[in-house]
Length: 89
Image (cartoon, rainbow, N blue to C red; front, side, top):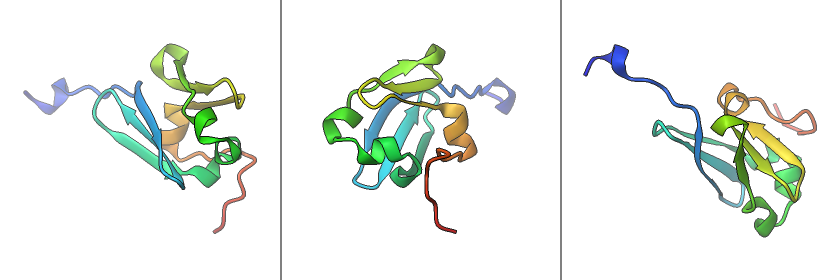
């Protein structure tokens, strides 16, 4: 197999959390891990609310109905925190 045959597939496979991070596994085998503080709605949600997520946007998005939060794999890969996040430099 040549490199030209490898195709990235940025669709969501699984979402999980640690106490301070969100982890998104992609169909192509990559894993995105970012600080939970970047997404205040998720940070302030209960574990039950965080674990109630749905794949949306043709597989390229994640929706948390109980928290009214949506993230895209594009934004996660770009390292884009929520505008409401208070990040420290």
